[in-house]
Image 1 (cartoon, helix red, strand yellow):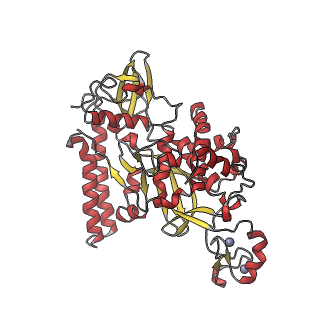
Image 2: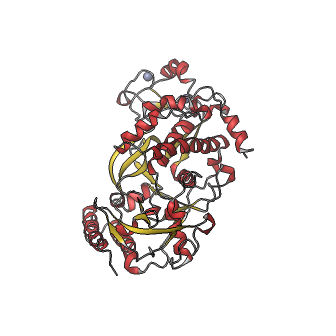
Image 3: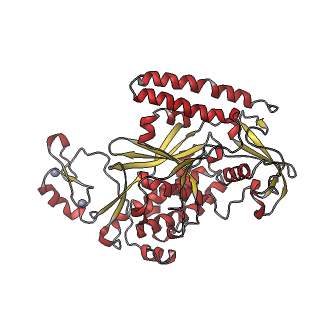
Length: 458
Ligand SMILES: [Zn+2]
Ligand SMILES: [Zn+2]
């Protein structure tokens, strides 16, 4: 059990060496003599399973170098760990510097599910408009004072959480990836770590060889996208942009890919993980009961191979684990000393393909030390050893939303299940499945986009 957060941090901080350990990307050669796998039988170093040798001679010869990296390894399965990362993302959205205008002003129109104005913007974007009136105190958030025409408490709460979880997708996800690099993938070199224990990710026993950020878009209907207009100050603000979206990828040694997206709740994509096990005082976080988390793992990939294509359109991916520019930053971060984030800003520009705003940079500077601290506490207390093997997942339906609007999700769900079953029973080929999927995807979604163009619908 941890003592206090501060004690844990000071015990774990001030570490002497902070070098990044890069896991093997393939099992093709001897770590020492580089003899290829096809020419020799390679075996792991039995203590750490992170170096491969063709003979005991090679292992002996390499020991001088390997000694400093060798140790015992805690392998954390991503399946048990991703709700913890999702909790960090949710906690980031509660940062005291963040004050969303829609949370301290009254909502004066009726953007209830299945109603509310869809507005088209000059650049072609369309979104549901939220009109903001007079300022309201923080205590009123979620109440009828905050949103008088919100039809039920459930509806008001859902919109409130969609707004809280909105925005800053790049800085939040990048800070999670850099924290993993800095706090998990440096553990080998820590002399103060008992038994030179190190912590590494795996998925279903296959080590993670790479992780980083994917930049792309999420096809979101105008009904599910938010925009804000303050009628007193005549200021306009676009909500989170689905065409500038970011999520995290993980690659395994066996060549599988897994994706974690915790930033779609604001788009009404409501897959959540129960988080009371992760977001609590023991782990240095406020208590949260559920957090948005969509982990597209092997199960999804098998059951619904095309679901990923429906949800994301990736444009670019950037490895954080293998990003050379972060080496110095991580080396100097023993005491969370992040005054020079130039390399991170450059990285943000590379990933997004644009100059990031001062606001994004400022919040990156805020998120990074917080995220690193949470990871460091977790590495030090080894709380991950007690995380449930299977996270508790739930899908939140939209209260009061009638079938007309909800049918998009319900239909998709039914459709995928029906065809998934046929595919499983061998009644249809994967090609037929793809065809069936496409015929669904191309029709109703297109029709919905058309409908969204009319501000007077229903
Ligand atoms: Zn060898
Ligand atoms: Zn070893």
